[in-house]
Image (cartoon, rainbow, N blue to C red; front, side, top):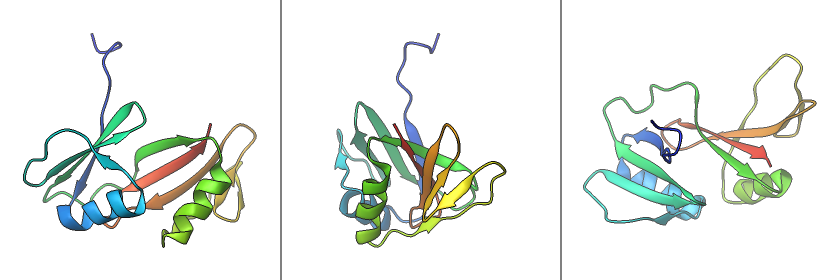
Length: 124
């Protein structure tokens, strides 16, 4: 039923205007479609990211959005130049090289938005 449907990544935020500055200004995303009070939809590649105000914002402790990037090192440098701080995690079988976690098959770097939603950049 859903195998041929597009999914939308969704993140909850406390303040849509603070989120707008981060998603548009820092990440460089563009608004897709019409805006509603407390809700923003952004175009990201061939997909969408829905950002909405919620009293449950700041309660997720897992990755919310994963971005596949062709140049992980470059993406990390660019976001750091815009003030983004990266997260470091101790994961068995994974080594950390600066802000990038590397294993035999995966390279990933994690960062948070202003509400603590965790985003991952994965080498693709």
